[in-house]
Length: 256
Image (cartoon, rainbow, N blue to C red; front, side, top):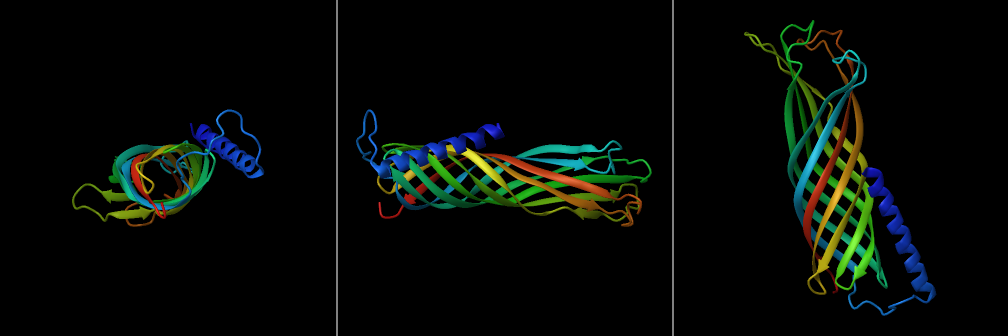
């Protein structure tokens, strides 16, 4: 699915570029060659809101918790996404190309208990917390304008703040210290998707789109010797964050 999305965006971008070149050179177009009645060119800004489903995969690179290494935990959570976007379109007959950037708040957060009793660590209890608080993208758009309806593909850069912690605590009374091991940070990855936009009048339009985001991997060191886990327990853990987004939005085109 990811390869299909990114490949489709590349194909549509190439077709749009060829259409723009043909229009600039004045080449004849078969069939209906009339200029479209609606003009999508110009600067716009708007708001969006929708649904996000995020997935975090934890990989144990050294076999610290999984003797054989590999996937330690794979969990998904659902939440709200909302924010704003600005962009600019250029229209060449029925081909539309543009650039858009957006910034969004996300409510993705989940805590999962695992390995409640690790051999050799006494009565240690582990919990993993994953959260994504905000996400931004910078994307290109390429599509087909059918008067006041625009169908487009989009792809580009994605960046976001991901919080990942492994919390270790002692269960039997008297309870021991609770120590978080932090693997949080800002990640940079890729985004691709499809959408459609409907112009209500020369200035206002509404849109709906679906996006796939891959924020990539981040590696951190789990350090023992914290008073809860033995100092001999050290290893590399890797987090991979992806998400699907389905959202709707409204745009205002300036100078329409």
